[in-house]
Length: 328
Image (cartoon, rainbow, N blue to C red; front, side):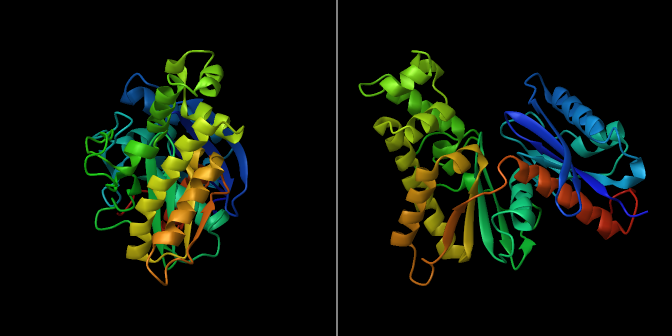
């Protein structure tokens, strides 16, 4: 029996989403929960519960397997979590524990890779053979696709665009480094800049959105205020766009992609940030590379779910049938 469905799970620093997807990309069932903050096994229990709920009305042979995108460095061949900045999953055997909990084959990958696969198969990069994905959310991730194939590097760690250094003396990154893209463009960094602005003259709009308390300003408040025309919030996002553009100039010069897709909660809502980044690339990239298109992702939070489910279908087809042990 050929499997009809696959489950995609997108694990983020704020939310975990799961969806049951048909082969052509239609999600027939979807659910989300807040990401637990009380240890790794709470996160695993949440994943297992979501998957179990998602496949509750299906027969096991109908399900190709479960793909899980994690905000982590994944050794793809070993299917191991080597490093995880925003969640305590490093060294945890996520694949085996989830697999035993749901009785389905499980495939792990980086969440940026899953988002890239989703946009390639079903979204903004459909039909594009060479593109770069960057996701701006709690963290900053990405994916590299060359000639229609995901590039993972020698161990599966490629595509960590969020940890490209843009300022040698920049602020600390959650990973422990200094001046990485994530140090400036992750939602905690945008929120911190918003809180600083809210305490100063001109920060009235941000203070108002945070119910009068500058300490409660979030990245979402900054984006909302900017979209409503607040100059202070706009300046924060335009400065972020300058930094993103400068970082992407180096990537464009190195890789010469046809397209750059900007996703994640901030990337898909902050049009002006993305537009400013595109302007910087057009001004500063080497000749012959300035025609690269920079677009916002189309699939929103569904990109990671769709990409993870597509990964599960790929692994099922590669094995040639029903769930069994991986042969990575």
